[in-house]
Length: 66
Image 1 (cartoon, rainbow, N blue to C red):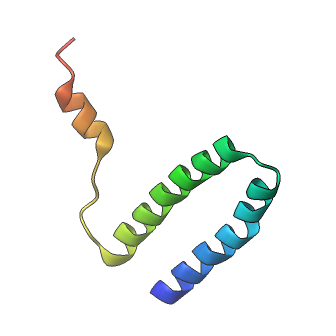
Image 2 (cartoon, rainbow, N blue to C red):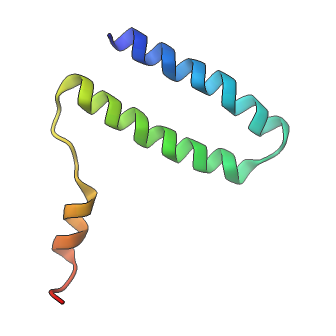
């Protein structure tokens, strides 16, 4: 199953990234990489059943009570 997931990620990269580089859309490439990295992280956590880091709950606990 991991090979299927990694193959899918590779296809997405091979389709999207070259066009962004050719058109010199570096900001969009950066945003794509960040969102893609989050997607890879979430997919691997789901696949392996690892504990998920919930950023939203972390932010709420750091904010003072309103």
